[in-house]
Length: 193
Image (tube, rainbow, N blue to C red; front, side, top):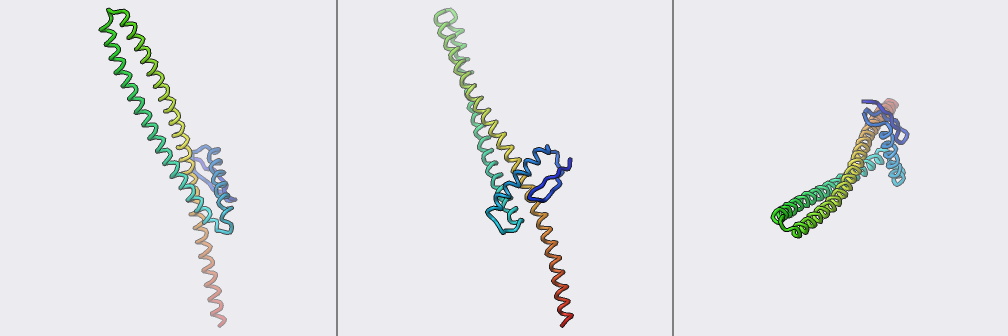
């Protein structure tokens, strides 16, 4: 894994990742923009609270993206089932037409009508197949877009959580130092009395 540095709200973080550095940089910029937007509405609040709220918002977006992805996958499954049913129907009609052609081979005019019917069925099948494939390609593109959004939100959420944990640790260390300082001051006052 490669080490990559990112900067979010003036703090530098080192990540170990195999992701493309440009993508990591873009994610960091997106995260920083989101946190800055939230911070505008939460002026005077601690950074850790702002980051926590940003993480919650990203988690909500992740949940929404997962739901949209599930709907798109369900729609794609439905299109694929319709395509399969259309193919089966076409095959049955084609088989019936082929049998009728073989039985009417001696009757030229009847054969010509059946050949026309077969050509019509083939064209109808091709049109239905083309429509179903176009729909499936659209659903594939939507799933890909939603999957990319999902991955981006997951990575941003993980980064927010790591940053919150780091901020919490720093606050704990500051609190401990202040507690020790207060104890020293209190001990000093007791000694003066």
